[in-house]
Length: 162
Image 1 (tube, rainbow, N blue to C red):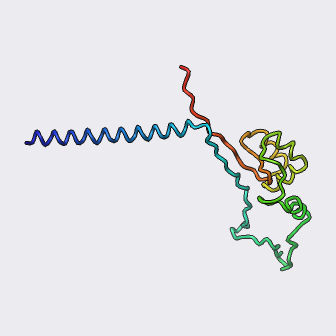
Image 2 (tube, rainbow, N blue to C red; image 1 turned 60 degrees about the horizontal axis):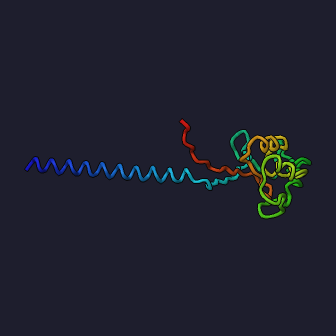
């Protein structure tokens, strides 16, 4: 009876191991199938650099101006701030299209023309930096409304020629 009992345990262990192998193989096949799809496109929007609204003490800063040691209020806006506001005024994700369709690289630079400055300001970049990024990174695109985003098409793993 003990031989019979040990035999049943052995059969159970082999059956569980076989089931585990089948599950792992099915999972691997599913992952391989997903990786081989050519139409898989991933689109992400590049987050802005974000401004750090804290002063040197780590306290949040006040955008409405600052007080100096004498207690007088500084003007919150400078000519430079106003000029930047004029560049991006009216540009929202839903309004004022700058391009007929998303574009990348030299095509985007050419199509934007003088609006390249506005797109750079909208995305917290300077014009030269944006131009260099568009020429260097073929996955970086400009949306019709001027926002930067990436389109990265997944490519399947190709078998070795060996």
